[in-house]
Amino acid sequence: MRCRPALIIFPLTLTGCDGWQSTLDPQGPQADTLADLFWVFTAILAAVWLLTMAALFLALRREHAARAGPLMREPQAERGMTRAVTAATILTAAIVIALTVVSYAAQRALFSRNEAPLQLLVKGHQWWWEVTYEDAQPSRRFTTANEIHVPVGQPVLIKLQSSDVIHSFWVPSLAGKMDVIPGRENRIVIEATRDGIFRGQCAEFCGWQHAHMAITVVAHATADFERWRESQIKAAEPPDDLVRKRGMDIFLSRPCVMCHQIRGTTAAGKVAPDLTHLGSRLHIAAGTLPNSRGNLAAWIVDPQGIKPGAHMPLIALEPEEIEPLTRYLEGLR
Image (tube, rainbow, N blue to C red; front, side, top):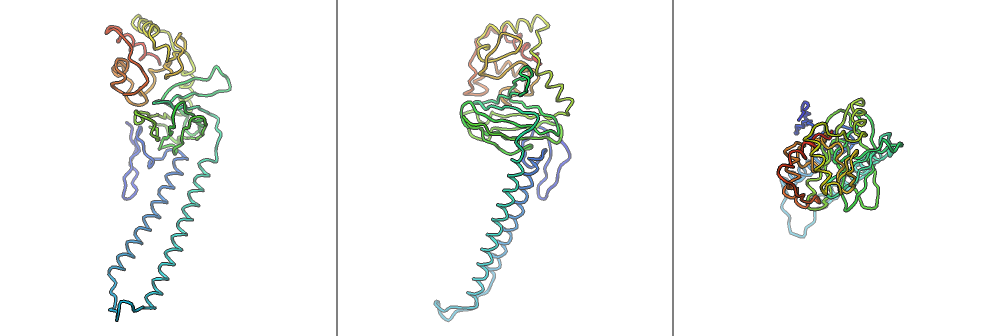
């Protein structure tokens, strides 16, 4: 994990580390707007709390003169209390109105941009994210899963759809939350001001494995992003050794092809993640496990043991088939 120098904001010390989820470590203009809004609200509400506690302390310490009777009135004291309550009411209304205006201005800044040169269609499934890079030329469109790559310093428009239930797309260091609703397309713009890895999460409870529905945003320099995109557009390279060739034959002879797609092969399933470049991804199972051959083997052999309720079924494999299959999948880069 790559960390940058700590940002000290009394009384908090915030460390910027790749892969962490933190709204207090903004790395994009949208996240900056939200972080500023958070600190404005925090400062004002902290001041209100301190003033309230001070007034309460003074009221408790104040000595009251003995009254001649319980029903006797003190006009001067009552006028003072009336003035205090009136001032507090006016101040409260002013604070509420001011915070409303600040919040509205932040919302306008966040949603003023609804277009960008790079556009992605992100579809929420139980429990993974389908990511399609759109292009005017159909031959340059491609689909990946659970991982978004973006160029640094360029806004990216993300169109959000759901295939089943309500989800919520949230990458705290880059933008705020946006609901993903069946039958409706919502839009959000993200922009990274530096290269790095930013973890996101489904922020709306969507079922059993809601907590294991992460999304990773990887920000590259523009040239690196273009190289990554060109590699993703290509179909999968044919296996270059006998073990991986056997692994491909095993994959294509199993029910895997009914759900998964590997471009360049006869596997053309559309209901599960596209595996064309699986080996180049950082994680598998929507951020549940780091992408390694051992984890691939564990996931293939017993997906329910790792992510109970996942829609990936158990596939009957012989012990000697696991090694070539995982070698083949690991090599899809």
